[in-house]
Image (cartoon, rainbow, N blue to C red; front, top):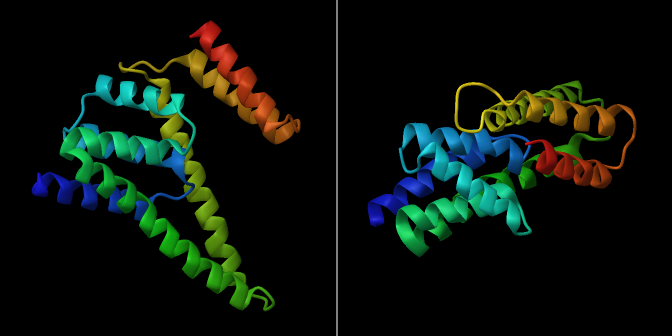
Length: 178
């Protein structure tokens, strides 16, 4: 159990350190690490745990890390997964906040480039997560899910639809069409 807890700590620590964009951007990395690299879960188990994590309020990736940690190494694994996933982001947020407040009054072109690069990185991770979730358990993507996601993004980004209303409509459409 100690070895499994250590592996959970390393895996989720790496995900927490290298994933930009937060919770949903982490989903593809979590799936890749836990299903493909470590073999802790099957694709069906991952989908089930992901579905369960959506039932309860809170951050999806944090709940998922807790559920996977619990399955793999019990309560110590659950605690290690949640801690390792969150701690790198918290430390980096404090460091980046310090940099931003220090250089915000200066003309720091390099800082704007770093922040822009992070935004594009987060967008790429979100796109990868969407693509992975659009292919439920097979090789063929669910084009209905892809279309609904693109419609949601377009409605919120271009037509100023309230994200709350957009997500409600998206959830209902998914329940009906998928």
